[in-house]
Image (cartoon, rainbow, N blue to C red; front, side, top):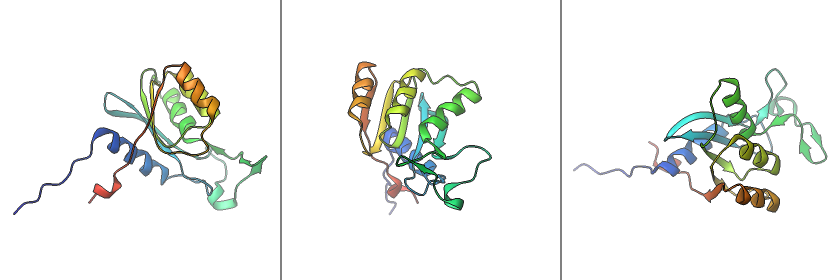
Length: 151
């Protein structure tokens, strides 16, 4: 008798992709991943870690200044910069990210034209970031990855 397997919905699928991207992170403090999606297609992705050519925190430790690692670039920034580097417009796209965006990333997402942000885990939510997202009309919603459905 054949058992019918459960199929992931789109939100769970893209949230799971963000979780997989986080596995590439070179940050020792928090692994964050994201994907930029338009028309149910991933157009860019990112994870937090060092810039091209620099040492990685997992290899040499974090470079902490005022409580923040200044060596790392955030997953959302990496994804938006990937769009810029390859000439892909982020305008009107959705962003799936493992953790709530920080204030700086929030401002970048708004400026890039991201229309919806889906996150799985709350991490140091910034009230002003949420206010800016609301003012900009960016929908913010918590979603759940479903890596448990993978073979």
